[in-house]
Image (cartoon, rainbow, N blue to C red; front, side, top):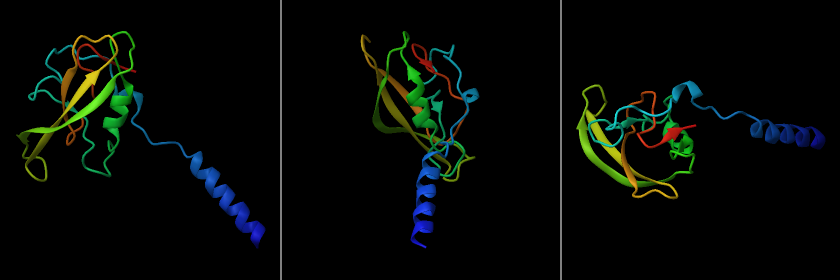
Length: 134
């Protein structure tokens, strides 16, 4: 009986380690937006829709920021600056929400970029001008 339990737990441990992580397909990501305001203004936030847990895009913001690179492939450091900017949206359960602001920096950058992110709605994200997605 002990051997059966050892084999069972061994298979369980290795089986969990080999389970692929569910991710958003690469079709969800494109390169860079042509709109110079995309992501840089409250009116045109990047819609990453991960706030409501259990949704298809529950980890979209993490994958998005992991795939974001500078104009020459530089690694981008992402710092959350906090919530801001209330908005109304009748299609949402509470009638609206708050945008989040993030600071993007990379080595050699003249000044940090500040972007606005909507974590309630999801649309295929683009990189803001000056950045790219892997």
